[in-house]
Image (cartoon, rainbow, N blue to C red; front, side, top):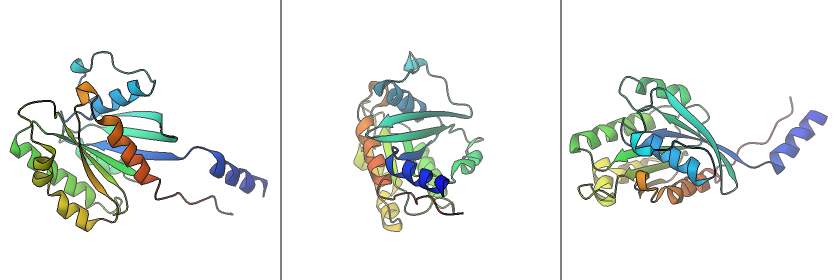
Length: 200
């Protein structure tokens, strides 16, 4: 009984914890987004983000944002590593899918197909909110957020899901637009509360 009461107490008073995945093709800017978030919320981050190497495997960070302990898993986007993504799908609360708005139409179409495959996985339920970051909006040749939405066919995604799908423009290297998008995602995850401890 004491352990149950202790568990309930911790459930009530502790900060909520949410687990989110950073997904997307290689070179979309996932790791840059994570490093900027770390720097923006008082954590040590990579010094020169313009020289940030591609992620081989994964990066993980726990960041306190807006009253939430957010655990972010940044998974490498290389084609050969994407098969491993599914190993991280269990108990995920939200997904950040980063798209290079300045890439070729073929690459954005590939990103759309990869996103659709992720959302079709049985562990990714329709009540998990999806934040799509249309990165590199600072570049003149980048597609606009509206154009990215059309290319990814986000209206179709929204019609198929219970939770929200939100496309947000950003420029990761300039740390422009990142915090607002992430705060939106965390607020959405809080609308799906975790179950309290049960008697065993």
